[in-house]
Image (cartoon, rainbow, N blue to C red):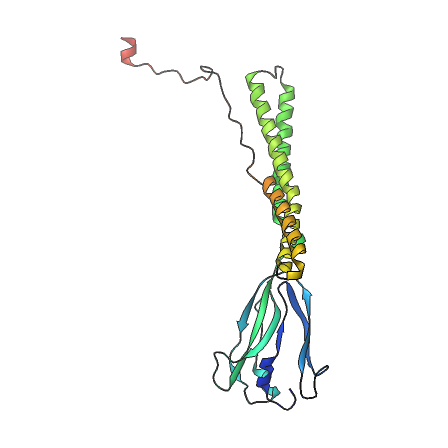
Length: 247
């Protein structure tokens, strides 16, 4: 790269693999012939989504010196991190060039996932525990617990206890889904490396295991029992007499 124009930078590519972000880079001639140069850069693991590229505006660069690079604006959008860049001329005029920048959206750390779900499940299981306690206290006050009223009250407190168990299990299962997310991201990262196929398979199996545990715990809640009454035991308003009834 010594004594040549800026367009020769299109021979250099800085790119991190999926699941990693660009930490730093610099241009150097270390380890090269006297007239050559290269980029040195470091990638670090990050919680990121799939990579996508963004192209900045074409600017005059071909045949010019390095100071014309100050017209280039490689950048990513909000909540994105840079994973690589390369100079190219596709879509530009003859003496223009531009940068293609690879970016990835930052993902929520797996250990932070589900805070809102946890709060909802906790609120619900505590509410059902309070209702269970109230109906159980009413049942214990009955003089004849085996009566129809006693059975209906028992059905109510048993239902609230089952709902309490359901949402308590769902609350605890959020931790399983966090593990599932962790192993899913590891699987996505390692599946692209042929030498890491066994690790990728292990991560995939772990992801499916924890995800299924979460799905089972957060399925449909128990149905509310339907109150039944013996035939003829429900009082109805008295029938209104008409002239036909009294004649």
